[in-house]
Length: 499
Image (cartoon, rainbow, N blue to C red):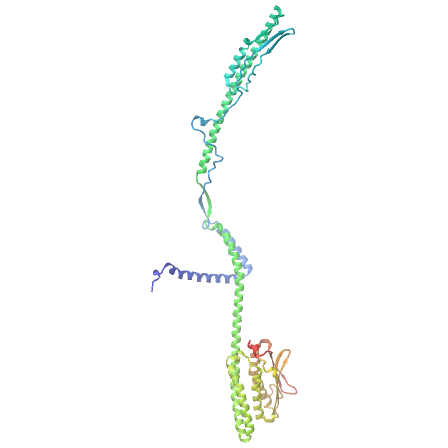
């Protein structure tokens, strides 16, 4: 025999699993029985206390603790990230360019025409002078070029005189034109100097804007680098661990399952109790029936030998005095024994326990019995048997009619000096089989030989066991005298009773 340590792992775990399963089943039935014992009001209190206890316990460190876990970093965002600037000094400057009008030739010239209607001074067609706003990005070089062009304007003056002009008028016109030109040149030079100053100021402002833009670009690049580094860095978060966060859901599921178990298990226990009570009732009725049948068999065993001895003694006496009557009595005794022997055997066996027997066999026992008694009592006994042939196949409990007939003869007719009549009648009344044994004897309980009533009590008990409230035994006085005993049972044939 192998030791437990030599068994394979599955073999070692199997006994433990069986013990665990058995303990679980016992615990299940114990908890279900406890739930069934609770009223629904107490079950509600139990559920409320369980919810309160779980609400208190789920936040304790024993059931809930903090857990730090590392979260997966999101993928780097390349669409919105700025492009990396070029290396060197150029990486610190924004690509800013100020586009202005191309430099133009600002050479200024005038044309003076002297005619009959006077002297006309008109400027030569030339490119327009650049403004301060147009030359802001060209700086001081463009301004100096404009000033030089304005200074040389006086040398580019052409004066055309008509042939009819006189000398004095001509000199005066030329002098006037010269003065006008000098004023125009001075004014143009002042404008050029002012434009140069404005251009220098615009250049300074543009340089300051370029430096500010470069600083902003550097800050933006630094922030972008910090953002990329933060994206690449691992992220962590603190969450609640343990069974605490789920204890309330488990408690609600437990309460719901307990309510369903209480309802279902209560119905099962009620069904089991009803089945147990039905089984106990059936066993008790079977025992009572067996006891009653045993009593009937014992009583019959006591009556039959006494009746048999008396009959045999009567036959022996009649053989000497009246052989014909002795022979008739002997034949009736044989018929009685042939009909009654199966009855006595069934009373002590399965047939007696089942109580299934037809009325014809009971009448077959009563007829020879009464014939024997008529031989013994002679003219003191008159019998009538009124049983239709259609009722001979009806079910009727065994030995009941025989008991009633024996009681009528022994306690009613034999003690009476002149005897009397005895009638056995069977009929259908209100759908039930009714069998009546009536005599004209002394009456119920009036004879000195009155019995203890055990026979009638046994009949009532047997009827109760076989048919319940559907069967009735009634005892009444007969008219004009005697006793009338009636047994009423449900009407059905033996085949129907067996089926």
